[in-house]
Length: 324
Image (cartoon, rainbow, N blue to C red; front, side, top):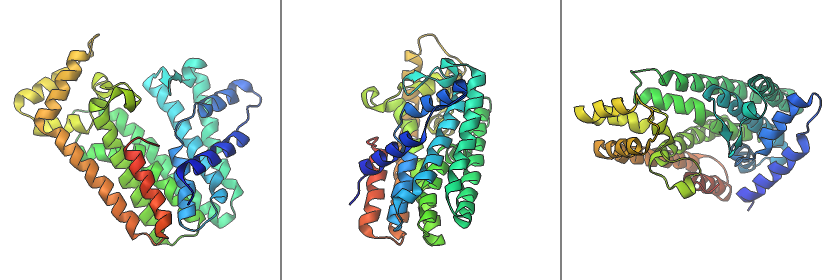
């Protein structure tokens, strides 16, 4: 049976062959720069695996996989500008290495390129893939806007937050899987089921990311632990603590999320203690488990060979354990 590394290596080789800098260099070098920074290539791998699961030739899905990955990186370039982020994957962000105007323009070209990669498919397949891709692209932008709105909103709810992470994170995972099913000419029921699998897995992944941001091991998490608290982000843990906490806990939490002290260590520890005492930590663990189990239940219902589906289940488990 083909494994995850097989698909990752195959995609990386295809990506290297396709991406080339050309004139004007200040437009195209930032594109090869951000793409060369790596990342785990999770979304394109899922497109290739899904194609294989439904009996298609994974090599025919390479351009769709490339479209997903270029779009994902385009969104990172523009998100970094909006967040004024200095680093991406441990290196300078595009707008810091060049400038903001270059970041905007190079990102625009990446977005256009991502659509061009679908031109290799025959008309009917092209149309089906583009319908999924365009809907997803708009939802990702909507998710980013919801996320920015939450920075100033005072009445954010748990359903609001789940909608935001669905649009910002989960829909791209789901679309990557559905496109593989489309390329393989899988049934509409299978296309919908694999999409729903991706949605549930994507939500579980983001909720776990919220948990690990506060309580993860800094050696294995790969990001600064407590970063969301330092930046006053209204994550699931914050919102659930506001919902369940005592009056004193709620007031203290709101006060702490209105400041950014030079040394945030005490703030981070106090907030984490409120998250634990309010019961928010136990609830997010339960939600992560529920979404993951529902994803695997959907996977079992899909009409495909069991040994093929096993790779998707393996991918899901490795993703939740941060091993891919």
